[in-house]
Structures are given as structure tokens and as C-alpha cells.
Image (cartoon, rainbow, N blue to C red; front, side, top):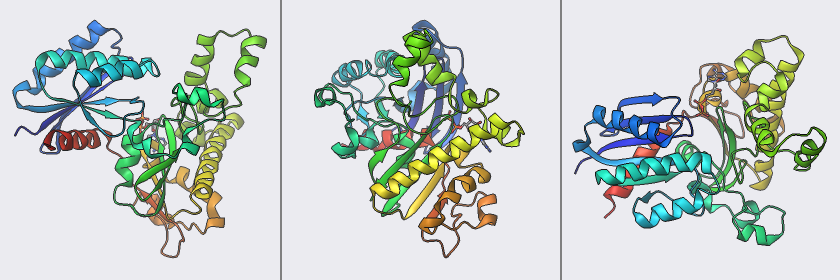
Length: 352
Ligand code: ADP
């Protein structure tokens, strides 16, 4: 059986791929400024020329929004139909990937779709539903959660009550009990939750109509502000990168960084309450797995829980950074979303 996996990660402006042979990464690239269907197809053609289609066991697609779908799925006509329906919820994310799936269908290679939302399907209704009239829940307006591929990957094998913090450009925190997601900070879209590099995170929803009315801002512009001009960048007015903010003497830069730590600490605290305790806190992604100072600033909020950090281990980005006497284990686990997608896809292909 052919076991090479081509992992595709297509966004609204880029086409990324990673190629795995026997679970080892043997090639990857990122095509930027790819905006149209035609441009996407030409990127895919270039990828196909590089990777030798005859040895591909399957193409695995990262699909951001899978709606109600739990787990990875083999791509067939029925799945494509449901993806098209779900894409109404996340057009910017899902439609480019669907176009690439359709392109590969013509090549008749097996394909698997792996979803960022799937891991969070196990959340109980009380975590999924918003405090809106229930009819909207029934129409699909609910918490879906994102970064599930990463939260699942870094929590594998961890028993008990776990809180995973995926801190990259997008940031989310997930509460996991015995391997199942029970709550997560991103919601209907990846805009909800903690303060992020350019996304606002949670706000009082009444701010939006207020800004539209009093600042005379259109709906499109509001969405642009919330997604691209807010968060660390918006508050500081200077940078979306925590490293710049932490080394700056500027008051607003410092405020932005403090708001970031504070919002994540509040989310961790909420999940410790939701699960009536926490056994393990995991940090991952660009910021979480590389920046000891950020982890320390967040963990300093949890003296009351008995969290105790071994400073040398934290500075060294070691796998376990809590001290022996700490009541909560704190871990740094690098995420590898592409590998996680490839492994999930292989499991589906080999399951017969
Ligand atoms: P994405 O969310 O785009 O998948 P990554 O997980 O790759 O992102 O993380 C990228 C982010 O991590 C960038 O915003 C980058 O500035 C930040 N980052 C990377 N290394 C560090 C570090 N040592 N300290 C702070 N931020 C970092």
C-alpha cells in the first residue's frame, strides 16, 4: 500500500503543502499571494510536478470548518456536498480548500478531509450553545471551536483534566477531560476568546452596532478591524509581535502584552473552574512553545492553584517546566499540525 501523504493547507491567500513519506516530512513549500481559483490550480499543478503523483497514498486536506462533522473523513461526493453547505459558515477558509479538493478529484487519488472543528464536537451542549434564543442554535449559530488538530495532537496520552494553550498568530485555550474537548475559547468563528496578534478576541457584542452607528463604519470595515487591526497590533499601535512589545518601553506596547497575558490567564482560570480542577497545562504553537517569559507571565496568575515553575526548565523550553512539588504539571509540547493531519488521514485510509 502506498503510504505517502500530501498534506494541503489552502487559505484565502496562500497554498501550503507538506509531503510525508513513512511519517517523515520530505518536502514542503508555501505559495503566497494566491487569491483566485485559477491561481490556486496553477499552484497545485506545480506541487504535483514536484511530488510524483504515482506514489501518493492520499491527499489530506486541512479544512478549517467542518460544522457538525466529528473526526477525519474520506472525501466522496456526499462529503463534498456537506462541505459546501458548511462553507457558508466560513467562506474565506473553506471555499479555497474545497476548490482544491475538487481539482484532486479529477486525478482520482484518495482524499481525506481533516477538520479544525472536529475535536471539539465532544463539547457538552452547555458549552456549545450561546445565550441566544435556542432557535439560532438549531440554525447552526453555536460554538464550534478551532485549532482542534493542534489541541488534540498536543494532548494525546494526557489523562485527567488538561488545559491546552495554542498561542500562535491565532490563540485558543481548550479544556480537555480524559482526551475529550469539553470547552474551548474560540467559538462560532476563530475571532472569539483571548486577545490575539491582530484579532480582538471576545467583546461586548453591543460594541459593534455602536461603532457602526457612531463611527459610521460599515459591516465589512468592522470585520476588518476585528480580524486584522485589533489585538496586540491594535492596542499597541506598533506591532503584532509580542517580542517587539515586550522589549519596548512604550506604555501601549506594554499594555497590549499585559492584556494578552491577562486574557489567557482568565481563560485558563475559567476552565480550571469548569473542570473543577486541572492536572496539566500545556503550552504550544509559535508563542507558547518558544517564549519562556510569556509562559511565566501567564503562570504567575496561578500561585493559588499551587502551580510552581522550574525557571531553568522553563527557560530551556523543556517538555515539563513545572517543579517536582507543583500541584499542576505544566508542559511545553511543540505542535505539528501537518504531521497530525497526515497521521489522521493514514488512519482513515488504512481503516478498511
Ligand atoms: P499560526 O497561528 O500562524 O499557525 P504559529 O504557531 O507558527 O502561527 O506562530 C506564529 C506566531 O508566533 C507569530 O506571531 C510569531 O510572532 C510568534 N512567535 C514565534 N516565536 C516567538 C517567540 N519566541 N516569542 C514570541 N512570539 C513568537
